[in-house]
Every structure is written in C-alpha cells, then in structure tokens.
Image (cartoon, rainbow, N blue to C red; front, side, top):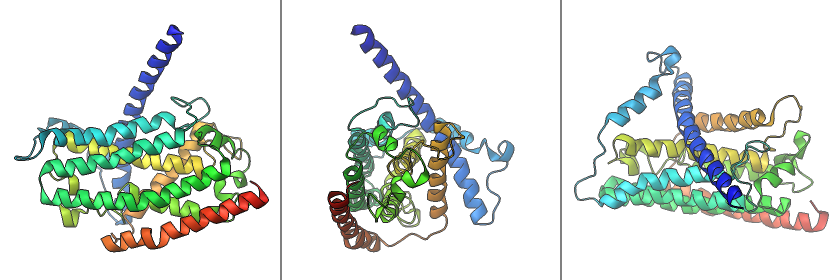
Length: 334
C-alpha cells in the first residue's frame, strides 16, 4: 500500500511538471500563432525577424519579462498583489489533471472530474479580482468589477449546458462521457439528435460562454486595452504579467478541451486512421484557431450588451433547452 501511494505521488508530480511545461510551450506556440493569424487577417506580415518565420519572438519576449523587475505599486496590498498571479495560473494547471487527452493519457481518472474542472476554473476569476484590488489602481479595480460581473453572468448558462450533457450521459466522469460518443461522427453529442434535438444550439451557446469566460474578444470587457489600459494587469510587470499571460492561454485550452470532450467525441476518430491523441489535438486546436479568428474579426461589444446577452437570451435559452432535453430523455430515452 505504501509503494502504491509513493508511485501515485511520483506520477502525480510528474504530470504536474508535464502540465506546466505544456502550458509554457502552448503559450509560446499560440502566442506566435495568434500574431501570425492576426497579421494575415489584417493583411500584415507579423513576426519575422527573430528566428525563422519569427518563431523566436515569443521566447525573446519571455526572456524580456524574466529580466524585468517585479514591482509592487505604492500603497497597494502587497500580499494580494503577489498572490493574484498564482491564483490565476495554479487552478488552470490543476484543471488539466482530470482531462483525458487519450486512453491512458490522464493524470487521474476522477468520477466527478467534470465537477472538479469547473470548481478549479471558478477560482481563476479570483486572480483578476484580487489583482485589481491589490493594485490600488482605479482602472484595475474597474476591470476587476467588470470581470466578476461578466463571469457570474456567463458561468450560469455554461453550467446549464454542462448539466444538460450530464443529463444525457448520466455521468460526470470525463472518460465515460468520451466513450459514450465512440464510433461514427454522428455519435458525437453535438449530432446526437436522438438524445436531444437542440444539442447543436447547446454547443453554440457553450462556445459563446467559453469566449466570455476566457475574456476573449468580443467579450474582453475586463481587459479592454483601449478603455482600461491593461485592465487588472495594469500594474503588473515582469513575470507577474507573464503568469497572467500563461493562465489566459491555459484557460483557452481547457475550455476548448472540454468542448471536445462534451460535444465532439474526444479522442475518437471516425476514420480509425489516426492515434487518439492526435485526433484530440486536431479538434482542440481547430477550436483554438476559431477563438483566435473571432478575436481579430469581431469588434468588442458594449458592457451592457454583453450582460443583456447572457441574462436575457442565453440563460432563458439554456433553461428551455434543459427542460426540453429532460422531457426528451424521459419520454424517448437517450
């Protein structure tokens, strides 16, 4: 029993180190990719001087951040200011523990893994709130207030979407949810019209909520560079800012990973030609590309329009969807 516990602890620590390395590598690749995609959309060249195709631009930016001094603002709350980046990045890394990227490629298969992921991702908003308050900067405080109100508004319809999927699959185990979608692509939850005719609508609502939860355009009201300088990150320098940067991309990957697991069949390949992990990665980064494309295509919405979209449209829509799905499952079965 003791050997099993030690082996489990070592495996857990190795996964944490691996997830941290993945988060850093992912932020580097997506940072470079987003700049290149942005440049293409805006008919510009993008990074090209630092290394071939500008691949060394993000590592150069990381070195620059590491070289900068981390300073606390005068009159701010030092403890909260220092703790905020950790509150943003640690829950994001912990969320990776329950995500199955392929059969056997999972740190821990948890029966309530879906609940665990959303429990950790909910803590991320505390990083923005604590960072804004500890900065003692009016722009950062306004940004933190916006972020909290936005998070509350869009977490409700997102969780209703998740509850609807749980109602259909009858489990919160992420591996089991993926295995329920094995086979041809019409077995994926987004196409399972026999389970509920409104699942495609649910998928669209989930993607909208994910964009809002990760503070991406057109829902980047909390950061809003043209209005609030850099939002809650205004007073952060060096790797304090860098950790928020890592957390942003990590949360995007988590949100897209859950979309793949809940709606797009996870690692299952309808063709049977590719390994599961590559198929999962293809779906994951197709959604990440969509998130980047939306950011550089659509303008930022107004704050009240953002809240009205959730409270007046998405929440009633998802509640109606939940009731219809419950009726459908009860009458016709899943």
